Image (cartoon, rainbow, N blue to C red; front, side):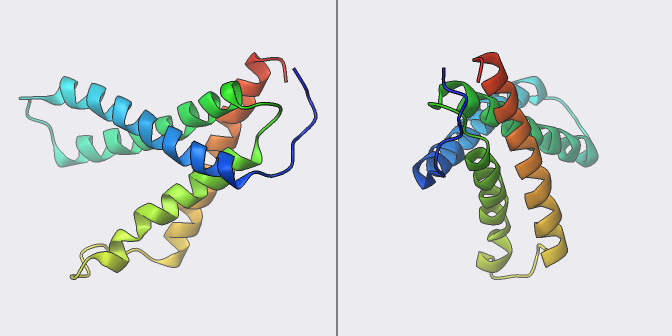
Length: 130
């Protein structure tokens, strides 16, 4: 395996967004099976959704780190930040201002997701010897 970083690839950013989405769907399916027909508080559901999102960034970054040729750390980080930004678009596309999402929350969410995605990619690269 090569240990040299490759030039930045927007294609791998796109692949990473798809991988993050797949991880969230898989984890969401697992969690929904656990919660089906059970009473849970709204706060528990919010905590589980947070863990699910963060886990998807970690698992998705790891997957990209394993399957990508060469070292790819920046692409999963950028993709995770873009995924957060895409999620925040709901505040723009919702006719009612139900979601009071400010710029500071977007920045914090994007930075956190990027760091977790990059760390997951690092773990995947480490596993493959890159």
